[in-house]
Image 1 (cartoon, helix red, strand yellow):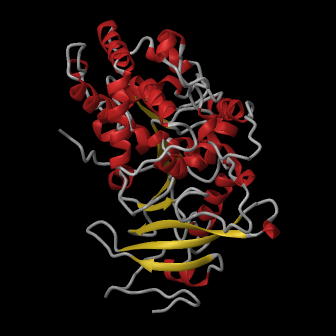
Image 2 (cartoon, helix red, strand yellow; image 1 turned 45 degrees about the vertical axis):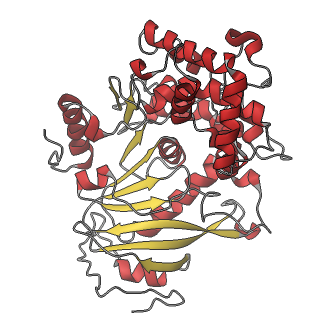
Image 3 (cartoon, one colour; image 1 turned 60 degrees about the vertical axis):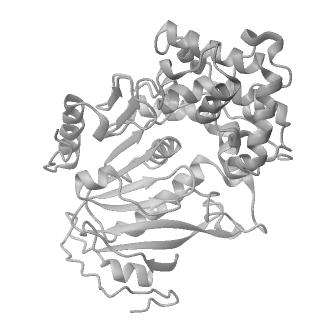
Amino acid sequence: MTFKNKPIYRTGYCIVVLLTLCSCQQEPVSLDVVLENEPTIKKVVPIGSDTIYSGMFEIIVEQPLDHHHPELGSFTQRIFLSHMDASRPVVLVTEGYMATRNYTSELARLLKANQIIVEHRFFGQSVPDSSIFDWTFLTIEQAANDHHKIVDIFKQVYPGKWINTGVSKGGQTTMYHRYFFPKDVDVSVPYVGPLNFSIEDPRIYLFLDTVGTPECRQRIHDFQFQILERRDSMFLWFQRSAESRGLTFSRITAEEAFEYSVLEYPFAFWQYGRWVCDEIPGVSSSDETLFEHFLEVTDMAYFADQGIRVYEPFFYQAMTEIGYYGYELDEFGDLIQSVTNPVFTFSAPQGVDIEFNPEIMKDVHNFLQKEGNNFIYIYGGSDTWSATSVDIGTKTNALKIYKPGGAHGTRIRSLDDIQQARVIAALEDWLELDIENIWVR
């Protein structure tokens, strides 16, 4: 089969979609018909199937650069569709960055649901052509309109329940989509998604001053001091490692990148949760032992030209709308010699007017507290990003669940039995489904 103007390369199977009438008595459209006839779908490439899905596709959708003024031009956005059954729910995964591959989310497995993964505008392959590229169209409202358009297209096929979800910045994107289009989905499940109110949200500092035990925090503090006090040898190790990885430093100096990496250490230590405090090398450790641990926890590429280039769209958003964090310098005194600006303005696009809007996140927060029903927020209790977790208030039925000691990788499957039961009970109620817990221990 060949879609009109859309070559599709079959792999020896066809799609059969059983259709039923939706509650409003409008007959759904088959997936094949939508993929062939929807004018904004520009390319469809099957990518195989598995034991769960009968068809999986990479799809290229045309989106306006500006949804309010489509005459300004368009770009193409990559999505991945995994089809099971038109009568089943849809899990909409709102990625916060690029979407490099198709995968099956834990919610899609749990709910036996169809799934759509959406790459975020201005990331990966979903970047406007240079002739119309304009940073001012990288906003949470424009991205929410991208998601709304995709929902509109595929609700023709899937008239049942919809759930949007995402992880970290994708979890933030889930909240923003629901804020602008509250009726697009029935349930939202943002994982480890912060809600920041400034480019240097001070709640991060309070968290880092209180997380874990005093002994562990002191050990982290002592480790940072050791790296800085052994600057001569540590910086040589840093330079050699950067050179071996092909990393360069022109946006900031290598000396600044080294100090930023030291300042980043406690944030990364708690965010990722891959280490225990007893593993942090002490003052008697060799230079090599100190540096190996330092390099394992803190990724120097985050401050190199190569890392900044990949995440520059994120930093534009962070410095204009969605906020971020910075670093406290005072405690290190003259051990910090190069860094003077402890926030991430250096990682945002250069030569572009950037001004932070402090109101939009407050509006999202107000919406979530007053109207954010059918939300399940999942956080790791020791993840640094839980410092700026959503305050759900008391006016909605939203659930907010912390995994004690959990890190940024916290998911439903990693919660304890009681927490899993709460999540599943809420999903059953809101989606009107019977759900089998696939993680029963």
